[in-house]
Length: 260
Image 1 (cartoon, rainbow, N blue to C red):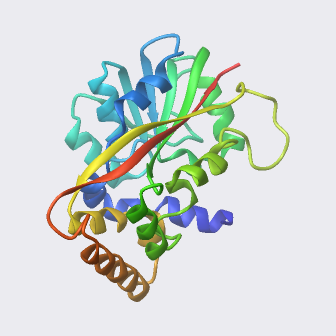
Image 2 (cartoon, one colour):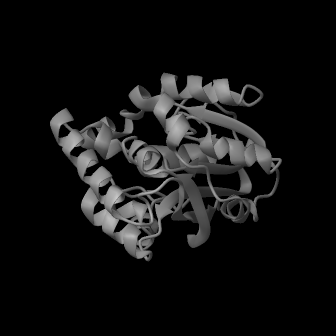
């Protein structure tokens, strides 16, 4: 994906902010605990916080959270759902916080949108010595046969390489490093881990969830409708998903690095 295409995808969520807040899953608490385990203190920045899915989990775990989000519509939803959280406009490339002001920076399904050549130094700047940077991604567990079938039917615009376990590990291993140019090492060696998760869905609500993915949001309308139609037909034909509620098998994957 080139820079212009990535920018288009990254900026697509605001138009679907309400649906994103309603349908996107939260994050496995065990995954968030593991991400924070080595942090030197309780101050956490949720960077690229969206509508607050990860923010809410951090609040539930007792962290001292600040949320930063560049999209005004997403930020409005976050403030509506979590009015007690300090939520600021900003981005990974321009973080509106002082030096060494947080003990951990977490990003939920957002780190792949960061320009790490710029964001890496900014994240290192706001982290206290020994602070933690962690990206979290919710993955569909395609080791379950019907989920693998759903991924095939949906196509990569809907369920891409970062959305299933094997692809996620390969696609995110070096996510904390700049893609181009030379830069001084700011973070240590990465660690990756996966934690069981799940989301209660119906066929209709799973289709609505998939419709909030960036690749779907930027599709031409006729192509989007055809893709969602194939997904609906697949779910209607599977015994696991055709009748009422079911649990979508998921994992929360975590990439964790320490600031040097």
